[in-house]
Amino acid sequence: MFSTQAGTFSDFRLSPATRAVVAGMGITTPTPIQTQAIPILLEGRDVIGQARTGSGKTLAFALPIVERCDPKIRGVQATVLVPTRELAIQVGGVLSVLAASRNLQGTLLYGGRAYGPERNALAKGAQIVVGTPGRTLDHLNQRTLSLRNLRVFVLDEGDEMLDRGFARDVERILAQAPANRQTALFSATVPDWVMRTAARYLRNPQMVRVDNELESPAEVSHVVYDIKPEAKLDALCTLLDNRRDGPVLVFGRTKHGVRKLAGRLADWGYSVTALQGNLSQNARERVMADFRSGAVSILVATNVAARGLDVSGIEQVINYELPDTAGLFTHRVGRTGRMGHDGKAITFVTPEDSHKWRQIERELGRSLPRQTWPNSTGASTPTRTSAPAAKPAVRLSRPSFNTA
Image (cartoon, rainbow, N blue to C red; front, side, top):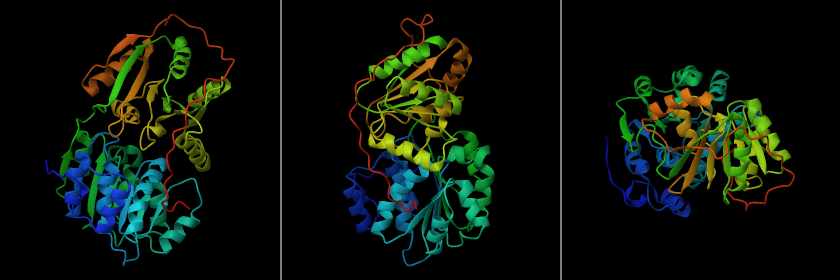
């Protein structure tokens, strides 16, 4: 494992313009993943970076990208592949600020919207692309995107990018990239199978591992409630009624279930919105804008929000329904307790969930604090007749990368 120490960003070989932007962001001390990964990437070497969600992985690869791209050369020199549209927007937001200081242009490539603006940005010589695999491959097949000048290729959320759902598209994209490119993979979890798969795409990568593989962030406190299915809705309302000021993220399992749960909560006066895969891109962006701005304080979501959702100050993550794997559990609870802030993860486990929960704990390698939900004896569906007290809005600026 490569190890180096950096007290400030001035210890890295960064241009004055990049250092000024980082200082303007109010970021003074590199996180462990940044301290270890940035020097290796600046040298042009391949990296596999593993660190928990919220540890600063995006900046760890964004800084080297803008340093290694040449503003005098038109055409794509850096590509970041991500699994979701929301993560593309988030990563683009970070890169846009850094790229502007170096006179670099970038664009986002993701589905659910018109191709025209993306084609125009590529035709004008965008040097940095952040995209989802399907839309990126579409542009390659249509010859509106060329990777012949590619210098840096990053797989963000690499475990998902190399899984069955995306692996074939990723392989086809990499087949059109120069063999001498620099490749980096970043993820909160890097199981053995990811290491074996990544070996096909990376050249003698340096492993940078700063956290245990599946362990949740240290700033997250866990409570697991044994609860009867019929008591879950009342328990959820009780938790929401007694929350503090921050936004809350509630995870369900299915698209239909998420829509139904959000609708019930809205009927009872809660400030709630829903995020699930059947929404159009415009609808998804409106949902996220409302949640980020504090216009709504509760987001009910499927696993589409488990990765890449970066909203500052999420107070609680509530697993209303269990995920299927420990990896998804880690990504879900990683939405809270980010960048040193405290957070809380609450998980409901019904008798029917017992086997799945035991398997998740085995994969995690530890047992989480567990107790019985008070009065979990077959509570009836709650009746809400008035809206709960309003919570203060949490404000977060939206990214400005070329999303037209």
